[in-house]
Length: 167
Image (cartoon, rainbow, N blue to C red; front, top):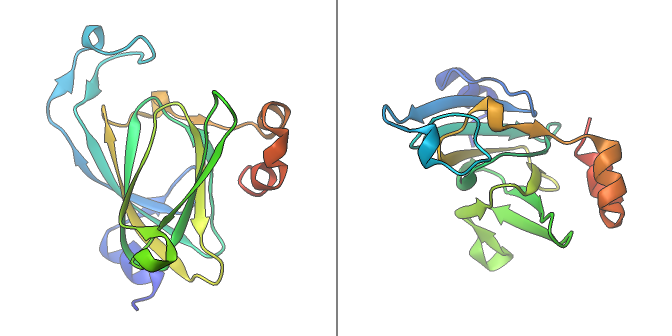
């Protein structure tokens, strides 16, 4: 397995504000006008966007939410755990992205718009290289980083996870 630094260098990845590294690989040249989008969007958006995303074993992607669905893809490395908290009922879903279906791992998984989610490499992992496709396309205006106290007040049953995946 190639070291994480190989991928960071080859794909010119930059530090991501939620943790780890990323490189945008696709942004549709066409946009959806603001009037055609649900009210939760503050303006027009690209049809779709895509990134590479890499987390090393000492990284985590802090809990956050966006206004679009996000499709995650596993590429290489070790399994990545994606934790999704559904705001309607507080249900927690754990997705394992990886290459071993007999261990409950999947190559692709969808995180619904408006859910709180974060991720980290599975226990014993070195790193995980994944991709994310967002439609309508990602815009930082749609990105909300979780505030620990507010999430703990709303979802006290997930205290350990919230404390681990917030800064």
